[in-house]
Image 1 (cartoon, rainbow, N blue to C red):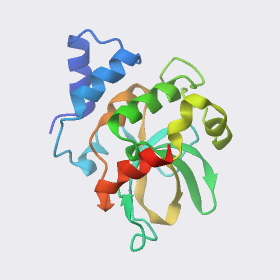
Image 2: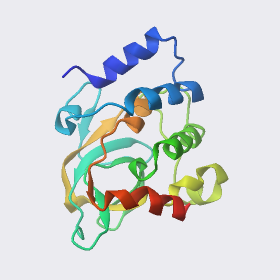
Image 3: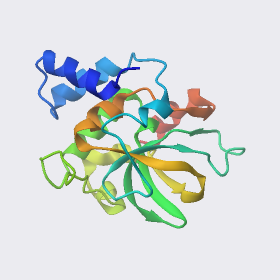
Length: 193
């Protein structure tokens, strides 16, 4: 399999897409939503993804997760894509963007891009996100169904760090791995918003 990030970035370049604009997010959304059969383990090994032992607030990660209460949950994502919000008891809080249907995910990403600490989109760039920020900023209203507590003991392996230039592509890749009643996820998310 060719590198998904490089392939999509090259197609965007050829199409004359300016990165990190609302137009580029719309282009990426349309481009990657029809991709199928993405090997998640292979994706985590692709350049420029880096494996890290723990999360840093404001960064984006994907990882394999085995929910502790999986037998009682109506559904859960075994391959979350999160923006780390902060530490939590025995783990961390994260915004799992997979809990939003694609149009709302695009709106949430637009809002998050407005609250980065800089516009370099390099290793220094982070989302300036905290639970208080999520509650205070009206544009971030889509956070409610995404806000999750992840237990470190349930994370399988390391976290795959998604560098800022790849946020748009990663956000729209069809990599959620729903367990349980997946048909209910977006219905419940919309009702929470």
